[in-house]
Length: 401
Image (cartoon, rainbow, N blue to C red):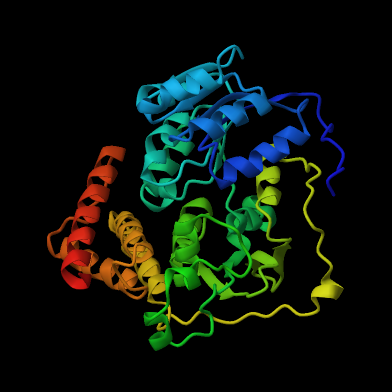
């Protein structure tokens, strides 16, 4: 499929700004843009600190500007792009200025809570936001969606499961939807007992059976916490109640999302596990563009299996679902503690099952202190995020050292 034709369905050039350009989403996006240079114009590429890769991407994609969040790396970036005519800058103000530029589509793919401010600032009237940063919806979903509604911006989900649901969810007939179902591979420990999981190593947890992802999301997939986050995101993206959201374990990762309607119809989106498909859907929406991914051969696959998730063996999913129902600051706390606990697990400072234990412990602490009250601003979210991280580190040091 390397020779797939370029995308020429429209004469309009789409101007793109990418937040989180050097991450996995940014790399997949770059591949699609390189294949269709006459269809897309890269206004700006924003990254955290990887000056080498950002400079390489800016050259290849003929970007108008390259911006780093980390100011100390500005000299390196300037040196690598000298003589190209590509504008360079660094720092928080530069990142926020990048989303202020005239553009048609902003891809929000900055990892972590660092993506909250710039992605929120990118929401403008008439602009499309292709969202890949989960913190925007997990930690600040009410604030983020309120901003989208106020401005009339168009929000397109990049995540494979949410994008799948988006493709089969009839928004104009949302009242006829009975259930929205996200699928999960079950990760490498799908058949492990709870006792077995207590002793797993980072190396085992990082071996996802189907997807190639970053370290944290791979660990979260192994614990099924990532699926919990995705359900929280879906509760903001789609006009359904919490009770209408469900999860199915589907080891083959062929069916990415399903929507059940009141007439009994169950619509599903199927595809190879390649992030370029949902990214391309957002890039070309509402059209479809050629993508060089492996085509599904259902006869070759032969069998697709499904099972209910085990909330006892995978308590992280239960914790996330409970946090969604609690609302307010609870999901933000779950996200913050999970990040600290996953890092501790990867550093061999905590066990795999200490991850959900830490989250429950900090949630209980902050709830008893009435610290999970409604968050009314991004600053409130970031303050709660910081508090939760401090408490998580303290719990892990006292429990696991």
